[in-house]
Length: 109
Length: 119
Image (cartoon, rainbow over all chains, first blue to last red; front, side):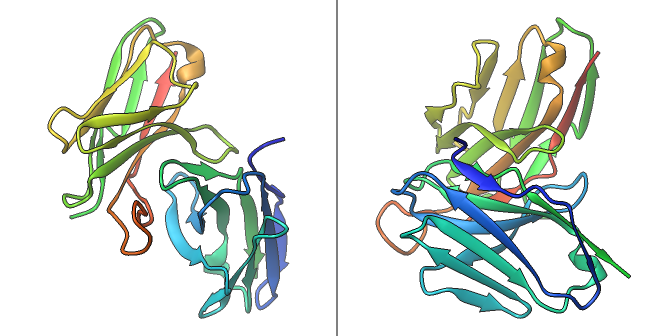
Protein backbone atom coordinates (compact mmCIF):
# COMPACT_ATOMS: atom_id res chain seq x y z
CA UNK A 1 0.00 0.00 0.00
CA UNK A 2 1.36 3.43 -0.91
CA UNK A 3 1.96 5.80 1.96
CA UNK A 4 -0.27 8.54 0.49
CA UNK A 5 -3.09 7.71 -1.89
CA UNK A 6 -5.26 9.91 -4.05
CA UNK A 7 -7.73 9.36 -6.84
CA UNK A 8 -5.71 10.45 -9.91
CA UNK A 9 -8.82 11.68 -11.75
CA UNK A 10 -9.13 13.49 -14.03
CA UNK A 11 -12.02 15.39 -12.58
CA UNK A 12 -13.73 17.35 -15.35
CA UNK A 13 -16.17 19.88 -13.91
CA UNK A 14 -17.99 22.93 -15.28
CA UNK A 15 -17.18 26.42 -14.09
CA UNK A 16 -19.00 27.21 -10.88
CA UNK A 17 -19.17 23.61 -9.71
CA UNK A 18 -18.09 22.36 -6.31
CA UNK A 19 -15.51 19.58 -6.34
CA UNK A 20 -13.97 17.54 -3.54
CA UNK A 21 -10.71 15.60 -3.45
CA UNK A 22 -9.83 12.93 -0.94
CA UNK A 23 -6.53 11.62 0.27
CA UNK A 24 -5.61 8.82 2.67
CA UNK A 25 -2.31 8.25 4.42
CA UNK A 26 -0.92 5.18 6.11
CA UNK A 27 1.48 6.53 8.73
CA UNK A 28 -0.53 7.30 11.83
CA UNK A 29 2.43 9.22 13.28
CA UNK A 30 2.38 11.80 10.49
CA UNK A 31 2.47 15.28 11.89
CA UNK A 32 1.67 17.87 9.27
CA UNK A 33 -0.46 17.90 6.18
CA UNK A 34 -0.64 20.15 3.16
CA UNK A 35 -2.30 20.56 -0.19
CA UNK A 36 -0.01 21.70 -2.97
CA UNK A 37 -1.06 22.75 -6.44
CA UNK A 38 1.03 21.95 -9.50
CA UNK A 39 0.41 23.43 -12.93
CA UNK A 40 1.60 21.58 -16.01
CA UNK A 41 5.40 21.59 -16.22
CA UNK A 42 5.71 23.87 -13.20
CA UNK A 43 6.89 23.33 -9.65
CA UNK A 44 4.46 22.49 -6.82
CA UNK A 45 3.23 25.48 -4.86
CA UNK A 46 1.60 25.46 -1.45
CA UNK A 47 -2.16 25.85 -1.63
CA UNK A 48 -2.89 25.47 2.06
CA UNK A 49 -1.87 23.72 5.22
CA UNK A 50 -4.40 21.34 6.77
CA UNK A 51 -5.21 21.68 10.46
CA UNK A 52 -7.07 19.29 12.72
CA UNK A 53 -9.86 21.81 13.21
CA UNK A 54 -10.29 22.27 9.49
CA UNK A 55 -9.46 25.48 7.72
CA UNK A 56 -10.82 27.63 4.97
CA UNK A 57 -9.18 30.04 2.56
CA UNK A 58 -11.67 31.74 0.29
CA UNK A 59 -13.20 29.10 -1.95
CA UNK A 60 -10.97 26.35 -0.57
CA UNK A 61 -11.69 24.26 2.51
CA UNK A 62 -9.39 21.59 3.91
CA UNK A 63 -10.30 18.96 6.48
CA UNK A 64 -8.25 16.44 8.42
CA UNK A 65 -9.56 13.32 10.10
CA UNK A 66 -6.71 11.79 12.09
CA UNK A 67 -8.76 8.82 13.28
CA UNK A 68 -9.51 7.77 9.71
CA UNK A 69 -6.18 9.06 8.36
CA UNK A 70 -8.03 11.03 5.75
CA UNK A 71 -7.58 14.51 4.27
CA UNK A 72 -9.95 16.36 2.00
CA UNK A 73 -9.99 19.49 -0.13
CA UNK A 74 -13.18 21.19 -1.23
CA UNK A 75 -13.21 23.80 -3.97
CA UNK A 76 -16.35 25.87 -4.32
CA UNK A 77 -17.36 27.95 -7.35
CA UNK A 78 -14.63 26.44 -9.56
CA UNK A 79 -12.78 28.79 -11.90
CA UNK A 80 -10.99 27.96 -15.12
CA UNK A 81 -7.77 28.96 -13.37
CA UNK A 82 -8.27 26.18 -10.81
CA UNK A 83 -7.34 23.63 -13.48
CA UNK A 84 -4.21 21.94 -12.17
CA UNK A 85 -3.00 18.86 -10.34
CA UNK A 86 -3.64 18.88 -6.60
CA UNK A 87 -1.06 17.08 -4.50
CA UNK A 88 -1.79 15.77 -1.03
CA UNK A 89 1.34 15.98 1.12
CA UNK A 90 2.14 14.33 4.44
CA UNK A 91 5.07 15.48 6.54
CA UNK A 92 6.68 12.81 8.70
CA UNK A 93 8.58 13.97 11.76
CA UNK A 94 9.36 17.31 10.18
CA UNK A 95 11.72 15.62 7.76
CA UNK A 96 10.72 14.60 4.31
CA UNK A 97 7.47 15.26 2.55
CA UNK A 98 5.59 12.30 1.13
CA UNK A 99 3.52 13.30 -1.86
CA UNK A 100 0.48 11.56 -3.22
CA UNK A 101 0.35 10.97 -6.97
CA UNK A 102 -1.92 14.00 -7.39
CA UNK A 103 -5.46 14.51 -8.61
CA UNK A 104 -5.89 16.24 -11.92
CA UNK A 105 -8.68 18.82 -12.18
CA UNK A 106 -9.97 20.35 -15.39
CA UNK A 107 -12.53 23.12 -15.06
CA UNK A 108 -14.45 23.47 -18.29
CA UNK A 109 -16.08 26.64 -19.65
CA UNK B 1 14.07 37.08 -7.07
CA UNK B 2 14.32 35.60 -3.59
CA UNK B 3 12.81 32.20 -4.34
CA UNK B 4 14.51 28.86 -4.84
CA UNK B 5 16.52 28.73 -8.05
CA UNK B 6 17.84 25.74 -9.96
CA UNK B 7 20.32 25.41 -12.79
CA UNK B 8 20.26 24.30 -15.47
CA UNK B 9 16.56 24.27 -16.25
CA UNK B 10 17.00 21.61 -18.91
CA UNK B 11 19.73 19.06 -19.49
CA UNK B 12 19.99 16.56 -22.32
CA UNK B 13 22.75 14.00 -22.03
CA UNK B 14 23.79 10.69 -23.46
CA UNK B 15 23.58 7.51 -21.45
CA UNK B 16 26.72 6.96 -19.43
CA UNK B 17 27.60 10.62 -19.00
CA UNK B 18 27.75 12.40 -15.65
CA UNK B 19 25.53 15.38 -14.89
CA UNK B 20 25.44 17.90 -12.05
CA UNK B 21 22.58 20.12 -10.99
CA UNK B 22 22.66 23.10 -8.69
CA UNK B 23 20.08 24.44 -6.26
CA UNK B 24 20.15 27.79 -4.47
CA UNK B 25 17.61 27.81 -1.64
CA UNK B 26 15.88 30.77 -0.06
CA UNK B 27 18.68 32.39 1.89
CA UNK B 28 17.33 32.07 5.43
CA UNK B 29 16.18 28.46 4.97
CA UNK B 30 18.43 25.94 6.65
CA UNK B 31 16.80 22.83 5.20
CA UNK B 32 17.19 21.84 1.59
CA UNK B 33 15.50 18.89 -0.12
CA UNK B 34 15.88 17.08 -3.42
CA UNK B 35 13.00 15.29 -5.13
CA UNK B 36 12.51 13.48 -8.41
CA UNK B 37 9.28 13.62 -10.38
CA UNK B 38 8.23 11.59 -13.39
CA UNK B 39 5.20 12.17 -15.57
CA UNK B 40 1.91 11.48 -13.84
CA UNK B 41 3.48 10.98 -10.42
CA UNK B 42 3.97 13.15 -7.40
CA UNK B 43 7.50 14.19 -6.42
CA UNK B 44 9.52 11.43 -4.73
CA UNK B 45 11.89 12.31 -1.92
CA UNK B 46 15.59 11.72 -2.58
CA UNK B 47 17.52 13.40 0.23
CA UNK B 48 17.64 16.41 2.51
CA UNK B 49 20.16 18.60 4.32
CA UNK B 50 19.97 20.59 7.47
CA UNK B 51 22.65 23.20 7.03
CA UNK B 52 25.58 21.24 5.59
CA UNK B 53 24.62 17.90 7.12
CA UNK B 54 22.89 15.32 4.94
CA UNK B 55 20.36 13.85 7.35
CA UNK B 56 18.39 11.37 5.26
CA UNK B 57 18.69 9.56 1.98
CA UNK B 58 15.95 7.63 0.24
CA UNK B 59 16.59 4.14 -1.05
CA UNK B 60 15.84 5.68 -4.46
CA UNK B 61 19.21 7.37 -4.19
CA UNK B 62 21.47 4.70 -5.69
CA UNK B 63 25.25 4.86 -5.40
CA UNK B 64 25.35 6.70 -8.74
CA UNK B 65 23.72 9.68 -7.05
CA UNK B 66 25.52 12.02 -4.70
CA UNK B 67 24.42 15.29 -3.17
CA UNK B 68 26.40 17.91 -1.32
CA UNK B 69 25.79 21.15 0.49
CA UNK B 70 29.32 22.06 1.51
CA UNK B 71 28.70 25.45 3.11
CA UNK B 72 25.12 25.03 4.11
CA UNK B 73 23.92 27.30 1.30
CA UNK B 74 23.63 25.99 -2.27
CA UNK B 75 23.52 22.28 -3.02
CA UNK B 76 24.57 20.10 -5.93
CA UNK B 77 23.14 16.79 -7.08
CA UNK B 78 25.37 14.67 -9.26
CA UNK B 79 24.33 11.62 -11.23
CA UNK B 80 27.14 9.44 -12.53
CA UNK B 81 26.85 7.07 -15.48
CA UNK B 82 23.36 8.25 -16.31
CA UNK B 83 20.75 5.76 -17.45
CA UNK B 84 17.58 6.33 -19.45
CA UNK B 85 15.56 5.64 -16.31
CA UNK B 86 17.10 8.72 -14.72
CA UNK B 87 15.11 10.93 -17.09
CA UNK B 88 12.85 13.00 -14.85
CA UNK B 89 12.31 16.42 -13.34
CA UNK B 90 14.64 17.02 -10.40
CA UNK B 91 13.12 19.41 -7.91
CA UNK B 92 14.80 21.23 -5.07
CA UNK B 93 12.94 22.72 -2.12
CA UNK B 94 13.87 24.59 1.04
CA UNK B 95 12.21 25.32 4.36
CA UNK B 96 12.79 27.15 7.62
CA UNK B 97 12.12 26.16 11.23
CA UNK B 98 8.52 26.50 12.35
CA UNK B 99 7.27 28.33 15.40
CA UNK B 100 5.16 25.47 16.66
CA UNK B 101 6.36 22.31 18.33
CA UNK B 102 10.14 21.95 18.75
CA UNK B 103 11.70 20.52 15.64
CA UNK B 104 8.78 21.55 13.46
CA UNK B 105 9.37 23.07 10.06
CA UNK B 106 7.37 25.33 7.83
CA UNK B 107 6.13 24.41 4.38
CA UNK B 108 8.61 23.68 1.63
CA UNK B 109 9.14 26.11 -1.22
CA UNK B 110 10.10 24.55 -4.53
CA UNK B 111 12.38 25.67 -7.29
CA UNK B 112 11.40 25.42 -10.97
CA UNK B 113 13.23 22.12 -11.36
CA UNK B 114 15.82 20.72 -13.74
CA UNK B 115 14.39 18.54 -16.47
CA UNK B 116 16.84 15.76 -17.35
CA UNK B 117 16.58 13.77 -20.55
CA UNK B 118 18.95 10.84 -20.99
CA UNK B 119 19.20 9.64 -24.58
